[in-house]
Image 1 (cartoon, one colour):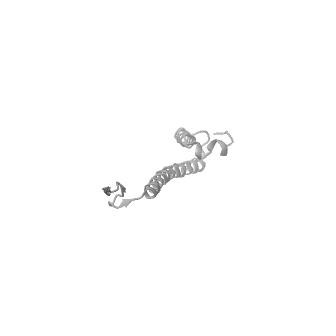
Image 2 (tube, helix red, strand yellow):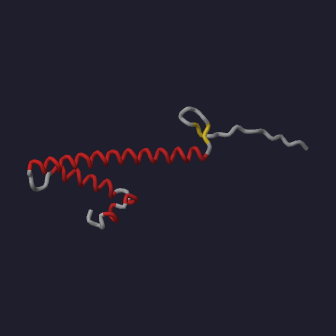
Image 3 (cartoon, helix red, strand yellow):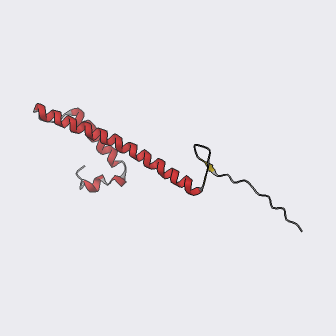
Length: 98
């Protein structure tokens, strides 16, 4: 009896350039995209912190005392963003003060 073995073409994932990707390549690509997304969030947070530092500097120069509503609102938003991901460890790092 002769068995008929047919080869089937694999259905590998394709990169944006059309190249075939192994399972490992797909996994690495997924991790890279996650890192890029996290990096973008970090850049946004860094920009907010820079703005806050500038605002505090302005308040210090003018001698204004007391809270600035916009500064407080943006600070609270920043803290909320940091708290939204437990991996940031904001609770631990702030010892529960934030």
